[in-house]
Length: 365
Ligand SMILES: *Cc1c(COP(=O)(O)O)cnc(C)c1O
Image (tube, rainbow, N blue to C red):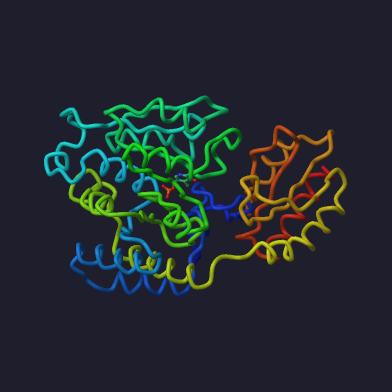
């Protein structure tokens, strides 16, 4: 069979950037693909499929409720709509019509990030009014607390490397403030690795992206407490209809969660081991110094940090790495400081060799 790359004249891609939406996020396992095929080959009462897979996942994670959704973004919008509507049927059909409901969503200013779209766009899609607390480089529990009024619907906390990390209140502190004021704490943990941890901390609604750490198909997950979860689920009859997920991916993702909880993902030690020959080979190139670094947000992820010498422009190197097929995608966040990062979680040994050869050509030109 002709490959999709040939048929549609697409570039091959080596993904050394991590779980990136612009590249299709992640590959799925055989077992997950089989679950997707099973879904594609059968009919279900969809409302039962959604609630029963939700119950199954809730049981695995150890939480009151769970719901598969189409993406973490959909999960955010649905959670916002849920805490505003609080189960109201009127709100379900008039989600954006103001009847004086509490609609304000307080978020630390440094958490109002662009992860591919602005998180404020998803808050607006859920019918929320964003209220930023603190400053771009500081948010304390007091900064949050002073923004709370009778118009506050929830506090939103984003756990991510995208956010400002310094002088930022912890999740525990955010939960404490929320609960002191009888407000729910919504946690965007889209790319996080721990499914049960945030439940134990006491967050009310927690949102994950299906294809990031969990390596499922395109999907998302909301877990949390009742009655919030019920209010999230009912949105599929309202504003979330445009965010519908197919039965193939509901079954594929549920399988991926089960596998992820049983096996976890690649551990830090394994990444460090796989990095050794890659780093050695990179260090044979002139004008390049490669070292092993841990993820900036402290996750158990190790990457190759490549520092290019002053006569090389990191941005130009990054551009050239992407120019040919296979296109090599890297982490570009620190290019201004002459640093390119390679995330090897989705990179095979063979592909690492190709990366080194490609870099050799670039630096000798
Ligand atoms: C990736 C990401 C999202 C969005 O996830 P999707 O499933 O692609 O919608 C939301 N928030 C953060 C912090 C993310 O990193």
